[in-house]
Length: 223
Image (cartoon, rainbow, N blue to C red; front, side, top):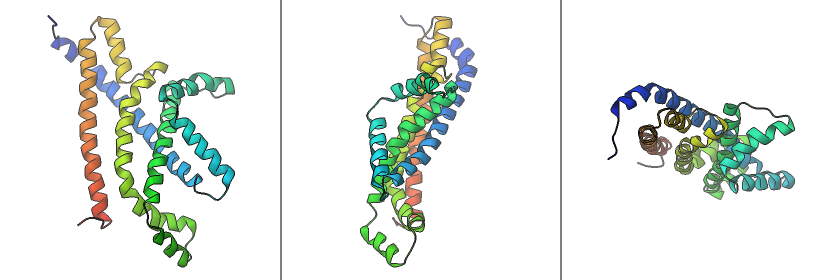
């Protein structure tokens, strides 16, 4: 019969609280990079300079078609061969940012393409610059349809942070594995990791849903 050891849970709690903080930091940092990079990538694909559009489109497809784990290894282990020596934390954040930036660029693209063509024509008739057209007209209308996808990828990044353990980032899974090796007990540490992921992911999904509704109300898209 499997015995659950509560005393081990209380002893491990401080280590897992610290690891949870590092996991949130990794997810937040990677997502911040992805949000900015995704916008840059989608705008670069909408220029009239065809070589740039082609190169960026192929880059996005390359990133989306290869696993995150491979990209983490590539940035951390292959990078030094090209003079790019990074710490595990920095390499992990860059890999997550690149990976999810490519996905978010597609989310942005869907939102931008949902803006009616008449809005673009009206901006052109008013002689608005491209920057003002995006900032004042297109992006405010493209944001609400994109929030749901952006929120899903935020939760996805949080759940993908365990992949950073392969390069030594001490997030939740890395800590659980280390604890298991020390105590020869894996039931409690892995169960605690699952509970922590659940305790963060569910409220995050709820808050994202509420934020989407708030944005739509603020922009007058719902009554």
